[in-house]
Image 1 (cartoon, rainbow, N blue to C red):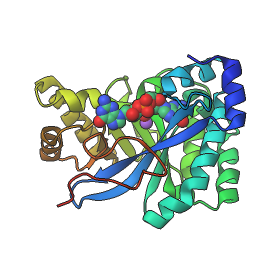
Image 2: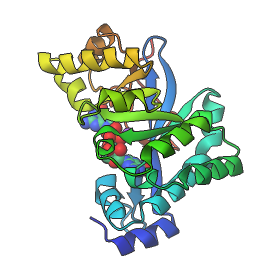
Image 3: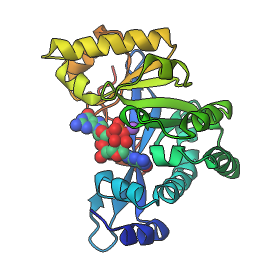
Image 4: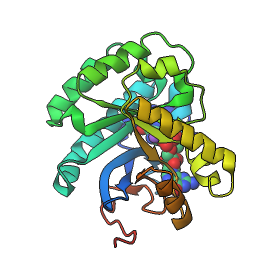
Length: 254
Ligand code: G
Ligand code: G
Ligand code: NA
C-alpha cells in the first residue's frame, strides 16, 4: 500500500488517473455509460496501481474527499470526449461513505459541475451497499440532496451487504449493480441465480434499473439476458481503459 504522505503528494502531482469501463445495453448493443475507476500511475516506474493500494489508506487518513474531488475534476475535464461519443452517455463515479458523510459535498459537487459545464443528470454516483449498512450521520440527507440536484444514484456490489427494504425504499437510488460474484457463480450455482432473481424483483418494485457487473463470458451474458437483465459491464465487453483507448470497444457488434 501507499503511505498517506505519498498519497497527498501524488494527488497534487497528478498521479491519480481515471480508467473507464463501458456499461452496455445488450438489447441494442449500445454503450449507455462509462464507470470511472481510479488508478495510480507512478511516474518513475510507469507502474499502474489498483485502488486497493490507496483508497483504504486515504479513507483511514481522512484524505479521501480531497482525493475524490481531484479525481472528479479529471473526469469532468474528460467529459467533452464522452459527450462527443454520445450526448446521452453517463459517467459513473465511486464515492466512499466517508465523503458522503460530509454535508458540504452536494454544494461542492454542484459548483464543480457548473465550473466544468456538465449537467448532474450525466453523472451517476455509486455507493457500495455494504458500506451503507452502518448508520452514518448525514449520509441519507446528502444522498437526498444529490438526488434533488439531479445526480443519479447507484447502489454498488448489491447482494454483499444487508440493505433493509425500508432503507432502500427511502433512498432515491435509480440503479442497482449486481455484485460480480453472483454474476460469475450464476452459471453453475442456483443460489446465486436466486440472489439475482430476488434483487431484480426488488429493483422492479422500487423502480430501479439493474446492471450486472463482471460479465466475462458469452454464457454469462446469455444467462443474465435470459434472467431479464439487459445492461452489463465486464471484461466480455471491455476492461477499464485510459481515456485514450476507452472508446475502442471491440466486443462483437452484430
Ligand atoms: O478498478 P478496481 O476493480 O480494481 O476497483 C476496486 C475497487 O475500488 C472498486 O470496488 C471500486 O469501487 C473502488 N474504486 C475505484 N475507483 C474509486 C474511486 O474513485 N473512489 C472510491 N471511493 N472508490 C473507488
Ligand atoms: O466494486 P466496483 O464495482 O466499483 O468494482 C469494479 C471493479 O471490478 C474494478 O476493479 C474493475 O477492474 C473490476 N472488473 C470490471 N469488470 C470485471 C470483470 O469482468 N471481471 C472481473 N474479475 N473484474 C472486473
Ligand atoms: Na463501482
